[in-house]
Image 1 (spheres, one colour):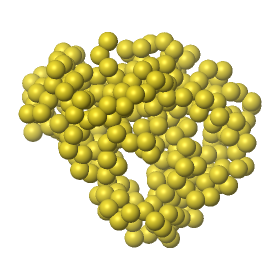
Image 2 (image 1 turned 45 degrees about the horizontal axis):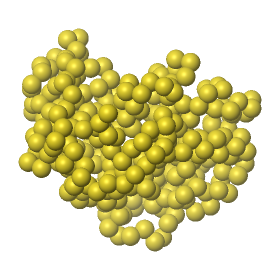
Image 3 (image 1 turned 135 degrees about the vertical axis):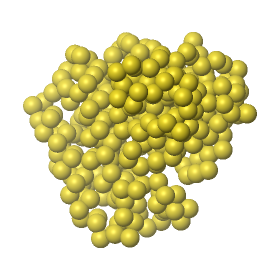
Image 4 (image 1 turned 30 degrees about the vertical axis):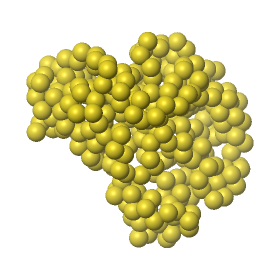
Length: 304
């Protein structure tokens, strides 16, 4: 089995989602610590410029976005399932809520309420978080607190009947994706614990999710990860959906970019275009041939 390599930094809220998914599956994985801010010279050969965190490397295949990482882990390691009771569609749809409506006010508060954020981090996030008006962060604190509080209460309401997990008696991706903004709140936002204090069911549920753990983690350096990619061959593409509205062909050069923030296009040769995944083959002198994979939902694909 090709090693699982997570490129992340420990304080990344989205990386916490991936780490919990790896732990849920009981997997051993290698950790490559990346810089919190750009540039990331040892990651770019694998991703082609994609700047969100984390990415999962499996040989010469690179998986971007936690939603696709969850799908790929489920495909390769189907038990225990991240989607009990056939709720994959609902659980992945919940990611659209937690990644935006729940995450974004927390990200704004972590920048607006902390006075000691280093200037280089602030400048990096100004270029990255286009949903934030940095000139209004302090003024918007009450609004963002209200948004965060309201979203946390949605989780509290879902747990109000005493269930152990959001969608029933078994944990899964729905729990992991709802947990990470709360993890961020407690770690990064001054007064976060006090803000969440009324959410008694949430607090008990958080302990259950935290107990999932991160699996068996071991560290490697970035050069070792690049060497593993160089010595591997990417999986064959899964072809082109003939019903896809873009009407693209295998082998065409395309760009792929998020349609929310961090809109850095990744260009390459199209090898997979399905309803829920797009993948491009790329060449880089440090790693040779790699294939970089993205979700379709939330990503723009354009011919170049």
